[in-house]
Image 1: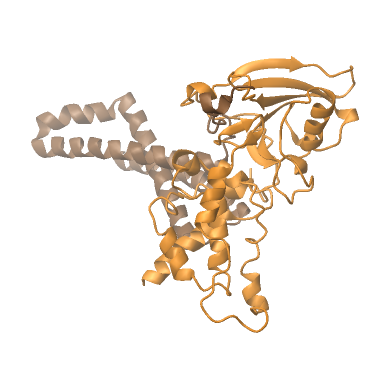
Image 2 (image 1 turned 180 degrees about the horizontal axis):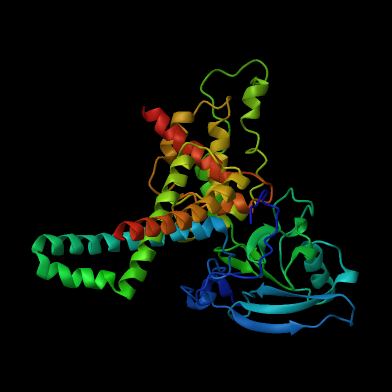
Amino acid sequence: MIIRSSDQVPRTALFKRFPIPRNFGVSRESRIRRGKTWPAPRVATRMRTFEIYRYDPDSGENPRLDAFEVDLDDCGPMVLDALIWIKNKVDSTLTFRRSCREGICGSCAMNIDGTNWLACTRFISDLAELATIYPLANLRIIKDLVPDLTHLFAQYAAIEPWLKSKTAEPERERLQSADERSKIDGYYECILCFCCTSGCPSHWWNGDRFFGPAVLLQAWRWLTDSRDEAKEERLDNLEDPFRLYRCHTILNCTRTCPKGLNPGKAIAEIKKMMIQRRS
Amino acid sequence: MMPSSTTTRPRPLSPNVQIYRPQLTSVLSILNRITGILLSACAVVLVVWLVAAAWGPQTYAPVQAAIASWIGRIVLFGATFAFFLHLCGGIRHLVWDTVHGFELRSIYISGWSVVAASVVLTVAAWVASASMAG
């Protein structure tokens, strides 16, 4: 099947996960137990079951997978609506981040049916019969669907994501031609939801030192900005076997971006710029 | 006061490869790795075959018999496919290094092309060698 844009939902029922044991390489405290089933408050005609990752730090117990029955006639159309419905009507302790409910804040990024996406822009009708919801992959979990993003934001800070200039400050704003401005199109729209970084196998294995697609896309956003004057310094910071070059062009990032951006291309642009400055 | 559980036990890591959906992007990437490893092993077999040939007919005969056996042929067929998959995948990566073909549609078209080309080239190589062997 040819995928044309990242919002296409995979339809194949076959091969939903890699053929490896569920606890393959999983540390003791991260192993997921079977949790409880929460029936809907009242019997409804259109129901759907959601399997949701739960972790309660106060219980001292391992994460578990709870099943919730959701009444689709009583609930909005998006996955986020279902989560809010569960929190309101079934289990008020279900914890997740959300804010704008329109795909611009990036708070409700999570792993829905095996791929990372924003809960507010994924239709429930696009989910599998037994929908599964996990937090963003490969992150330390604070509670339920809330991952600890401290490390990812520290990596973001490491690329110094602000305008750096050496020339004297102009009287008015720093001007940019329409053509120069268009160079940051497709990059400045990133909302830092970290769907891509959390879906990147290279970041799973080397996330301690590899910056990951979201941060590298941001790095390119500054490298390609005509107003920025710290190109050399930025490239020096990235010239490292891990920070940049652990990207092996797997392109899970471009496949999963909920904003339809292209982190894979941004990283390839950085690698090309590295070569060009050497010659 | 509740004991702070975060200090007594580490936070769990959310599952990654155990739950993330296999996609053409990740599957071809892992296949490129696996075929690369297999081809390294095949290089050793190739050296054994060449050394046996240089050694003389008495050494060469059993090695050749092993390769020509059914198991040998199946392995050789797999190695041919691995070779072409790795070769086509490598060409795809070379194109990417020039920052071309990054639109999602291009990524999927080139990915499936690599799979199709590898199948066609493998079959073609075996048909050609069979006809040459007579």
